[in-house]
Image (tube, rainbow, N blue to C red; front, side, top):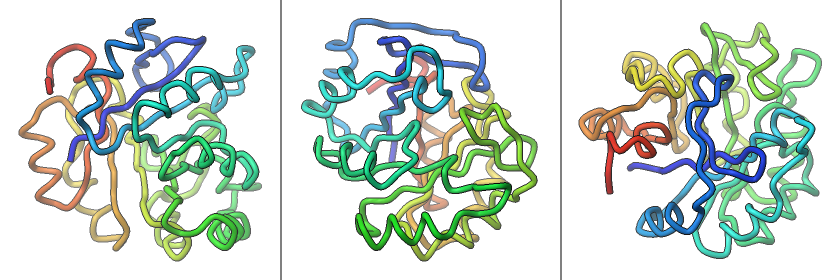
Length: 226
């Protein structure tokens, strides 16, 4: 399944390459919301909140988009309280990422608290990988944690994993299928992958493996259409 991604920064929809260089920017929210209205799920990420930028966050845009699209929301979700706020907007799932690592260790205490308080079905855990290791805080901080190990440890407390291959993110160079196969073998949870996906054929191949494709750059550039 194709899951379009809306990334917010500075009050606009953006696309970054490798999570660093801004490549595209849009302020016509109505156009993209209409384009994505036929999809059963859209991914909505507040990059300002994730990266702790001076802008802080994009709450008005998040609230507006959630009234019109069915979104799983992430970016700077660091507490049960923040997750509750996003779920109250109608989001079927919230995405926890960086907060699942604490002091270089997998934060199982938070994962369990979220599951007990919010319910497993409403939780997607993000595992973002650069050069084979998990990266956090808007991908600015590298860790020694293996992404597959992180997924296996956290599996009891979520209903889905979102894996982003930062090395290919935004570059439209293709998602590494061997990585997708290893990820699929590592967990029985729903698996969503992102990072460089560029064609419908690739999305079909991921679907055959049992993974959903989260796509940004290829949709916004027109390489993949409705």
